Image 1 (cartoon, rainbow, N blue to C red):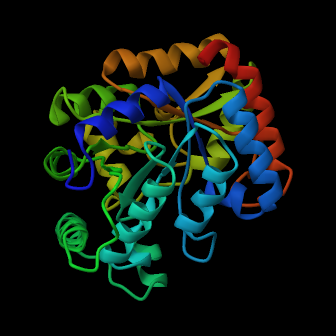
Image 2: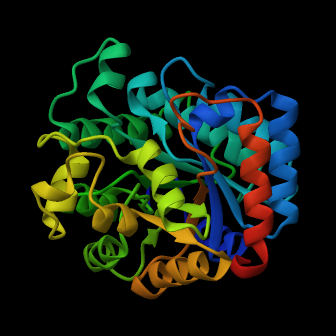
Length: 320
């Protein structure tokens, strides 16, 4: 457990979430009207999913205000930041925002925190250096703020998750958080992450999905979202190489082998099988991220949220 949570909070959140939730991309939500987001969150809850998560860029919707809207639009759905960007605010402010939402919505808010990417740090006026040390120092800021005389009243705890891919960040998640939220990872990473985290920590991986039976079309959609070449210094590149992929998998839009490992495609049954594989490998809860068309992130449109919810509705009978 982190300093901000407790055994009852962890238990209550686990019970509420079940095994499958939803992750929606910041570009999709950035261009969607707030009223459409409210309707989408309510529909996701009604479809039986246990949670709804989204990330935070620089220049998009601010994480705590945004996720407060989603909490207010739903009755029992767990809402998570996947992730809140540590470059956007001091650790004391991060704790205060999370504690406020936890008090307002007990056992319904999860704070995912991450170091994001170098370009995000630079846009925030920071230098992206030594991300593991930066995360450790940031958690120190949060923990110090939690016991400061001017801290928000600790009437309700909140779960703290780290965006973690590599072994050392996963170890930090085990030591200083309630678990890990890996992004864009194959099933074999879930098994490795569980081994590092141990049996008591939450493991909530992201799983992109394309609900499309035509393999070529499904891969085109997936490749347009995630198929950009990876440089050797990228944390994703290091993660994939550590899992047994090689340079040939990382160029020219990613190999079919790697793309199929990180993006599930096919009909409802095929996607349900991939989710179950993550659960069998040690995940507690899997976040399904629907990719509905090509150029989804490069050219976001207001109706993308409607399409995502439609795909989630179609998947619900197989997943929830």
